[in-house]
Length: 182
Length: 52
Image (cartoon, rainbow over all chains, first blue to last red; front, side, top):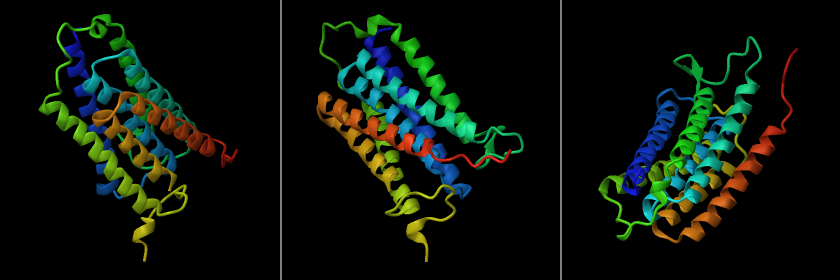
């Protein structure tokens, strides 16, 4: 895999992460389901996963950039495993709405495990890390848009979480936006 | 409140990764990751309300 192809894959990864964050937002706004603390932490880990691809696009592919994403994915998988185990008892209805039979935290666990596997597979291709004879190409418009999407969605989560939790600890089972309460 | 701060810190880390230096982005990433693990451990040590 050439560095150019590796960068294209990283741009694609950013669009997937932006879609995940947008999907979580859509569920929150359309279904009116406020994310619990562990749900928020899983969103945070998906956002943190995006730092590796951003560095790869900006500075060129490096193993250390992929390592950052791997670390974020491992912590994210631990968080979602914890939430799956919280609702594993027979008769427990789980937290929130199920999508295609699985709750969001189960999908998050599948997503983090998929990220770990895919990152490991991409790391197998050593040619992407070879120094190119020409300088690292400047990122194109599609890459810029992907980065703007991810940063914009993370910033939107800052506002949403502030509205939901206010200036105190978030409720375990939130039902109203604390700052919009009358 | 801690989640708002974490999202804000990640947004800043992304901006630094895109516009700033690599080493600063690494440092910010490390701080955010440690804060995330600390937040997770805080929630993971809550007593489970099981009824069996």
